Image 1 (cartoon, protein in one colour):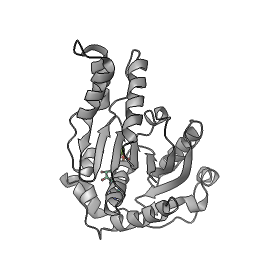
Image 2 (image 1 turned 120 degrees about the horizontal axis):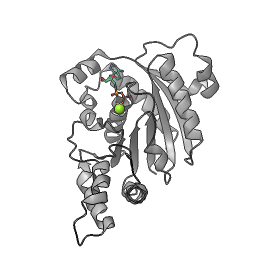
Image 3 (image 1 turned 45 degrees about the vertical axis):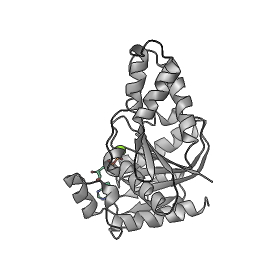
Image 4 (image 1 turned 120 degrees about the vertical axis):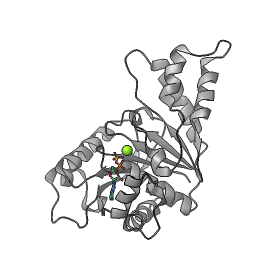
Length: 251
Ligand SMILES: Nc1ncnc2c1ncn2[C@@H]1O[C@H](COP(=O)(O)OP(=O)(O)O)[C@@H](O)[C@H]1O
Ligand SMILES: [Mg+2]
């Protein structure tokens, strides 16, 4: 049984970092192969995972509008570009969506991309989708049910309100979400109370916290992939415990 995990939340709250930690957790626990989908226009999941990104799918979509070699159908061209955009890591593959569409009509290219991605996803038991705050790409992945939606926030009212808003947005999409959790990142201890909109949107047992970890910050500053933190780093231990608790329900 495969598992699809999607991330959402305001920018800068830790989505990509936690997605990287989850991918590492999955590989460590034999939950392979993983397809990591970087659905943030500002792709950087590859940095967290320590792999190099050559191309994104939006590069392919732009090229489909004007640079398809003669004698090649658009379908074949896009399939080839998708294979080129797929990065092979150790226990996972990564694909980056790139920028959502600019001006002009991209319907044909987007439809083609969606069906190619749907087909690609079928090759993997585990999917991790790192989204941007607006969830633009996510709203297009209509073929797939999400087992676990992790909404990440920093300990700020704006971050928490953004998580609540994304929760509402997701409810309006034709995507079935099995389980949702609010992860308040960079918080050392549970506050005595949460803002009302948080309590209206999430039940208490859906809310968890993850600590700020100076070693993570140091790795980040030094440009080291944060998914390679030592196993005893506080953030790794806390994140692993969280994943075990959340994913156990799906087994
Ligand atoms: N628990 C944490 N402790 C210390 N630094 C963190 C923690 N979580 C995230 N960061 C740092 O915060 C910044 C934003 O994290 P990132 O994962 O890129 O956020 P997002 O993907 O939501 O934009 C990064 O520099 C990251 O290293
Ligand atoms: Mg990110």
